[in-house]
Image (cartoon, rainbow, N blue to C red; front, top):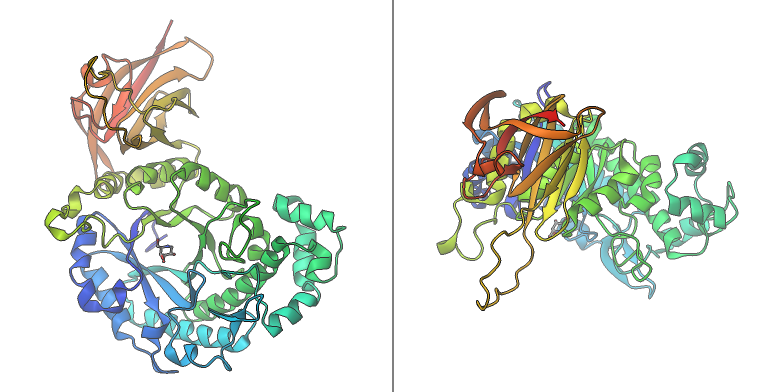
Length: 524
Ligand code: DGJ
């Protein structure tokens, strides 16, 4: 909700350090607006914000708010405090150079790594003080509520070892699992993550004991321990900020599916991974949403894996993803999972690399075209969220079609097959990666659907309720939404839809539009 109204966040995240210079940002703002973003995710780095202890630099925060506001954009600030990608690279020099006061994680060999330890009240309190100052300032200056949400830290967890082995960590690890955690887990036995339940049961379902007594001696126990400590630390930081200004706050996850060959520490151990979700929920009530950074090609599989643990408590927010594949994945995330927002990373560089002579105009980028479509559709999407009336799909060239039951029909979607194979004897085409498309569907009524996407996607329909067995197409209109009102364009009933056989979103010789409405009927 933004300004009392539902808000669909069509966002992009700037590169990590872009926001540390307002000059650097100047040409970026209009580019973001031209790409049809409504929100920019941008960092506030602790080192830039508090260069000397207790002395805050608000200028670069203010210029971001002003730059975004001038271009009618909202902001989500990323608090790069104690950690960014597991490491403490953005901490101020006065913290970095004072290891006595601000202790580090120690690894198996007793060596320090450049990561602040969660087991230090000094680390936590210094971070919380700075974060509170930031939130207080935003509340004071952001009269038009440009800043709508906050990411607390970035992709946290210990890298290089499964847990912190500094003295305080070793002591806590050898001590009892905190009673409040045991009570929390005990009261939710039916909703524990399967790995947690298995580890606990295998160790004898004890209700007290050390971490290894309760959960067994395994890297997973180290991960549970680190999750408790990261979540507890970040809860204190978030709560200190919320005490000043209670914007929604989320954390992002460097996602790694558990695999036998890759244990915690090869990915940040203790971050909000699904397998430690119960610990995060127990220890960090001040965090509103846990969310996945998703760069892997099989986007739907990863989204489903993350959602299995965190839905329905957490809405889906994609805080980072790839800018190119994002053009079609966004339709899947919004349609299939009611996502509240979507964010390609390094959006300020998209289309600029390779170097500028070949730079793509921002509005011509595929993600910009998708966002242009979704800007029109936002009111309809928001109206239908959470009602089971939407679906989304990603289709891949050469792969089988996918069936989606939605309303009174089953929709069968596929990447349109190539109907013109190369002529016999012609040079075989150089193999290229199969193309992908994405689409979302909204059941507008018993026999009517809205379809939109980054095509091409071809869809056929079959009845899903008793009655006449064949679905026919009465009409397909392409069109636009203007202020939430449907404005039809061409009526498509020839080659564009195979003479009434299918609905085709995008592409094709007839340049089918990206938004269409189809009316169906049934016959025998
Ligand atoms: C994930 C991190 O959260 C980002 O800050 C950035 O480092 C990207 N990875 C780079 O791909």
